[in-house]
Image (tube, rainbow over all chains, first blue to last red; front, side, top):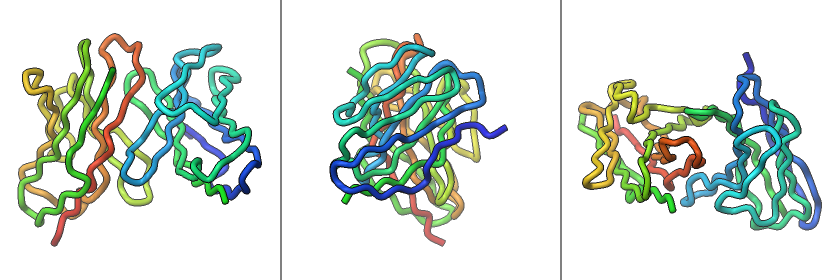
Amino acid sequence: NAGVTQTPKFQVLKTGQSMTLQCAQDMNHNSMYWYRQDPGMGLRLIYYSASEGTTDKGEVPNGYNVSRLNKREFSLRLESAAPSQTSVYFCASGDEKLFFGSGTQLSVL
Amino acid sequence: AQRVTQPEKLLSVFKGAPVELKCNYSYSGSPELFWYVQYSRQRLQLLLRHISRESIKGFTADLNKGETSFHLKKPFAQEEDSAMYYCALSGLSGNTPLVFGKGTRLSVIA
């Protein structure tokens, strides 16, 4: 049972480049989330999906888009990366308590 | 709007001393409160939730609606308790996503 799987684990981008962070869960959860973790800021919600086919903005959605491809997969896309998006990104799933992925360390130069 | 406040960024205690990590919240509805923990090089994981009223690894937390607090306590700190602790809040109805505080880093000194 893999739980929540995120890829890639590390990524370096140049300003203006685009990329997609992938997330998949095998626990049959309805809800999936994307958070970013920054020093001194804790975890801030970017987007979430309460069920397949729905997505909603969180606290810091600007510069990001998401796709709930099916019940298992929830991807996060940066269309034009900016240095302010340098962060550690966590995907999570869960309908009562959350299960987290191992994180993606993203640097935008 | 939901808000979680953890006033301490860093808390250092000696091994065997009591620990209290503070958490205050703001929420207009019926809250569900959680503590999540992130040990070094490990995934963020649930430590405990208030509706379970359980004790995990010697930690307890009581929801005080009058003071809007959910402080995490342990009577005797262990070195392996050193980690980042996050208090989190959602609505009991399940319609609101989990909102986290900024976290408190606990350092237990031998």
